[in-house]
Image (cartoon, rainbow, N blue to C red; front, side, top):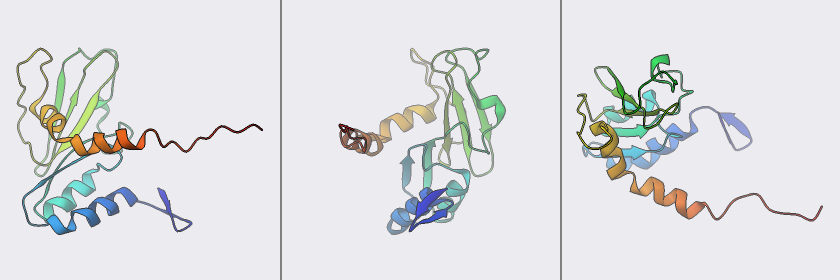
Length: 151
């Protein structure tokens, strides 16, 4: 839930992405996004406009299976996949007790690139295309809202 015009609103991130993607509708393009915006509902809505989505997912989202969450018992560099007709998810363990969860409507196979980290192809694609997301985060970082006071 987000505040907009003094009222609490559900799905503000989804609304923002939908509005920004409207000019690209029916172009077959991919939209790579951060975990704040990524949701299964948004992925399905973008597919109706012939757009694909690749994005990280927060572990507290309701559509994330319990098996995808970080656990100490999961082996490092292991991956778990989930496939539906319209979307696929992967949970990759880069280090102990940490899991990176991605949602994609573009990828539909459990391809793993054999490199030093055995990363799924979905994660490598996200890393290649996330430039705008990371650039925005880097530019916004120095402009924090916390200010020191002498009180």
